[in-house]
Length: 285
Image 1 (cartoon, rainbow, N blue to C red):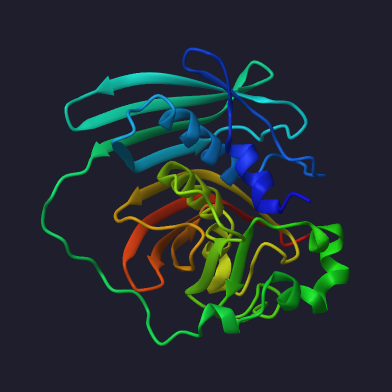
Image 2 (spheres, rainbow, N blue to C red):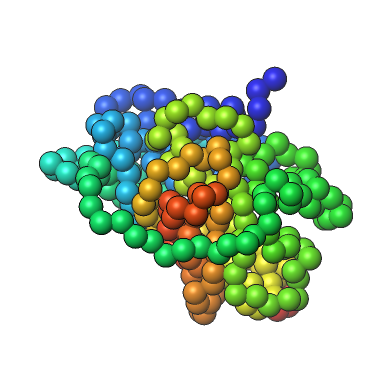
């Protein structure tokens, strides 16, 4: 039987249907809209397919413009904006039903030597192998989650600071989670980068409501990603444990902004993420 990770790898293996045009599918799941991390990951695959192999993505900036329809394919049109001596820039537009649902711009860089420093992440955290996985953590809330509880998951995500249900009503400024692909990936840096992009959208927006003791499962909460930015600093493997240290920056006008630093297990800062999203709370719900 294929694993959930195999299905994710297939999901990211886009079909080339014309020069600079690719087609992506969605998983056969009962969703109201396409998961934002899927569109971002597929768009980055499309961009990378038009870039020389010796250049690696160092930043991306994306906007979620319309909800994606999970029942029809997504077309990704790549605009080859610039091919320079050190940097390559691509713009990707995702289209469904004749309308743009997503826009991404990514920059790729030829590796160069230079100074090296970073901010250090949290230490003395619980080893991820000692923390409960999703099903163990969410078992007390299975009746609230429904069929989503039993859905196969390609990303093994483990909360350090407690799950969203147990933190209800307890204000905090951020959260830490360990995450990795649930299986072994091929030695393709593009695939590792795209899977990290996919996984980066899981928990970050929830962080914007944590200072108010709220999360995605709170009554009357409506959340949706608006834009997403990532900077890739150092090599990593998405099938090895990475610490996602997330913090709320600001929430106002029904929008929330959160940042996250993704570290390898040995403390190397691999990725920085910033995301803004809809954070609407209907007090009458």
